[in-house]
Image (cartoon, rainbow, N blue to C red):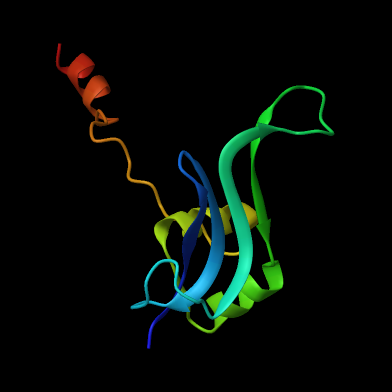
Length: 114
């Protein structure tokens, strides 16, 4: 059976809070997981120790357990993939290049013809 690393939503309305869980792929979002490996709070908050006033999102993760589950073949969802790549556990997914890129050799060739 396929095992996924995904987010399970908790919290109130308009105030989400997520547990990063390892669960079977066919179970419901908030059903009993195999293991809870971390938490993610997407609401930006000011750091109490930093006086600059920068806002940050809180991510707490058991890195050793996350590496274990990725090592045995658990498939992270896209959002969890992004979070794990921020920590450095897995490689970030490649972004698609912009749709339009002028060819690099087009400008010099036009200048030589004139």
